[in-house]
Length: 242
Image 1 (cartoon, rainbow, N blue to C red):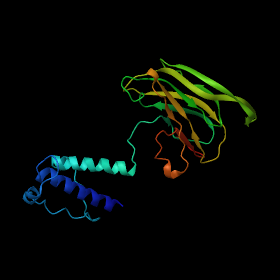
Image 2 (cartoon, rainbow, N blue to C red):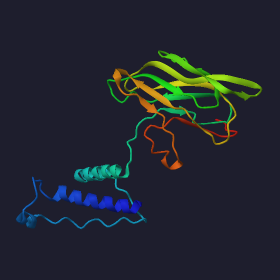
Image 3 (cartoon, helix red, strand yellow):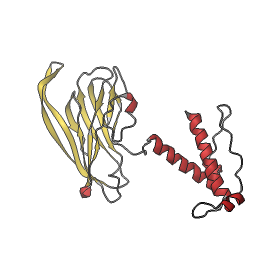
Image 4 (cartoon, rainbow, N blue to C red):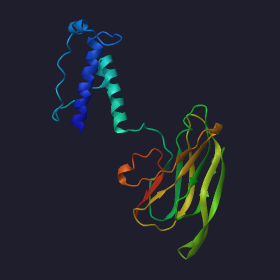
């Protein structure tokens, strides 16, 4: 697959480079006489082989060839459905033991994507099995939360839990070019090895902008990296030590 892509890219660069380097720019198609006078481009480059292959760098390419390479890369990205790299709301650590008292940090890596629009608040929905939650007091932000009743109650270690925190919200302001972390101290009741906990988040914006919702959960391992707005997740591992 890689060889076919590189062959296509080499041919595209050769055609584009020949056009930019060897043919005059003009409006509309060339006439028959003009086509006879146009110089023929050099022989196209040979197809790459797997042995002894070296990838040229953009810095060593002619300006016109560099333009062609960049244009070809954009076409490949559009055809294959590659998404631009953007910052997501994440959680750390990303791996944890299957039970115990744990501390997690929700990281908001950017504002709402507009230099004139900041983030006004962030709300995190806590996953099942999490109790005794405490929010971090973040300077300049107001911490509020919503509780929910557990019916039936969760029982662990001889103790019954009848309610827990459902959502944790911090209200403040995150301007352009800044990031912020929000802590959650929790007690995780025993979970099965390999369980993945998803911490769905909503990022509200100033100025009436639509909120950023980070709540997508993969339906299979194949589409886990293709989600546009993935929910922050933590993988639970039996006996895990940070």
